[in-house]
Image (tube, rainbow, N blue to C red; front, top):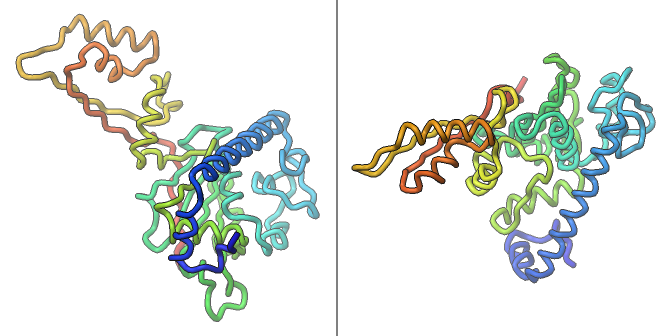
Length: 300
């Protein structure tokens, strides 16, 4: 197999197109099964207050045993403990997945702001993720990817992280320049030069960007139920229903639909489609309140 990091864009695309579909399908299935196993292990360990990665309690840390659960701010940890940890590659995309999975333990989807419409024009990647009273923000731009020319501390490809505790800074964006791993750089190259041939998805950790993907939003809508309160809702819907000229809706039937929706938790718009198949139904979907605001990194 060629070392993808050393081939140009045309060679890369030719290589990807030459991979047999059967092999791609097989590898995708294997990866999904591996992700499922890791996620279940994380959930099981989390239920016991333990870390599935290092085996230690989530509220404890050992200075010589670096681990992602340090970002949960175990008792006694200080920012200085991250100095050696973040001076070496830790895996940007692995860390993002860990944050997404932890956020999902707390609240599904709405704890993760990965909306492209909220991203800065100057950044190649931005995401803000909330878990209980902790908020993480990851980002990098082209100058970070290139390495800051002339810099003594950041002349290599790197990314930045911000960590807030109860809204107060624990780690600031400019505290660390975290090196990308070789795997990170390969994934970035693939996304940049062959984004139409590959698709990176976040199994078990989707964010609010589902609203920007019509296919995902459609699938999510199929299984959606009416929430008991605004606080537990994943998104808000505003639906308009109109009948063809000359046809009307029975008030009694609408009352029945509302009653059935309350009893079954099936959204009214779905019942409208069932009882009034000739109706035109338009639904506007909006993110819920409480979604974390995309945190921006600006020049000093």
